[in-house]
Length: 388
Image (cartoon, rainbow, N blue to C red; front, top):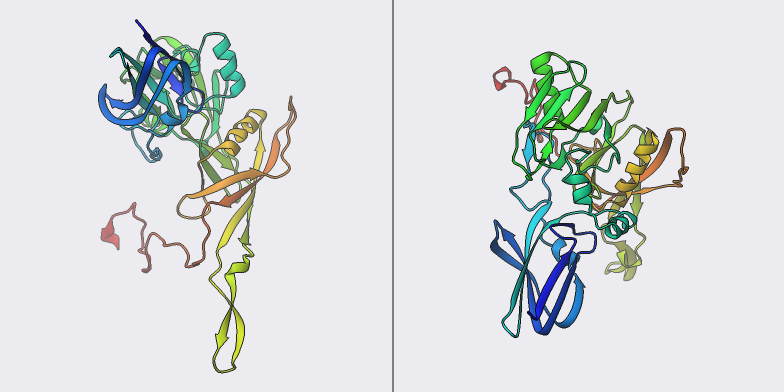
């Protein structure tokens, strides 16, 4: 056979790390990279060709298949199914045929996200990959979180957000450590889904009268990890940043510092022009309406060493949304001022963040409230309208 092909990594691959297609052929070969649903053709992503022995990185092509990820907060389900859309995972089929009519087909599960270059290189040299080591390993912390790199996941109450994972081989079980009671969470093996911790806490509170803060996660009888939920500090101002982490899913980072806003105005020379006045027969200066870009400066509040590493992932993110500033989330571009940390820190650290609004604004009409422009009712929407 004069046509052979392989893909590396095999089976599962992050699209923000290299995904190499290697081909050896004795005649010109055409390869078609397709997005499939249940192994049925959906659409072609890219078509290329080559001759002899060649290798191409197709990661950027695979990155184009994903849809926008929906906001997961507000759901009452304990297990949220994410396999129905192409938010994080897509089945890719690569079909090749050369001039001698020989064919070769490769199938790959492409995942949004990536791991660090040093980690990727280390796993590659060992002949391993992050999916076998972590996400498909039921005896470890298999959640798609960068908040923790060991078997313990710790977060504040204000940072609760569904934890994404690939459903393991055995039934998921959540054990609340104070009461010792367990909750079975049935699901379909290898489905991509999210564990809703708020719904888990509500279930234990409803059934056993305890607001759980410490949970052990099992796959069948195999211990996977421990999730700890801490009380948030009582502060005057509280903000949250929802960001797309390195693994391609959203997480939340809480901010407990006071915020200040700096309106930034571009000094564009083209914005000012000369206009003629017929009455005075002279020119005067005028300008077009000026856009203002807001910048919020805020301290994170004191964060532990592990949270500082989590902050680095936030600062690298390409999708960050600020909540608590207004009624709706606002997309921002985060950066840190004079940020440094010790290699082996021994104390919490307070970091100053600068959040630049992604959109500039020239029309300052204020936010539209929930009541619109009407006089608000006696009760909020949680109460019956009969009292209004």
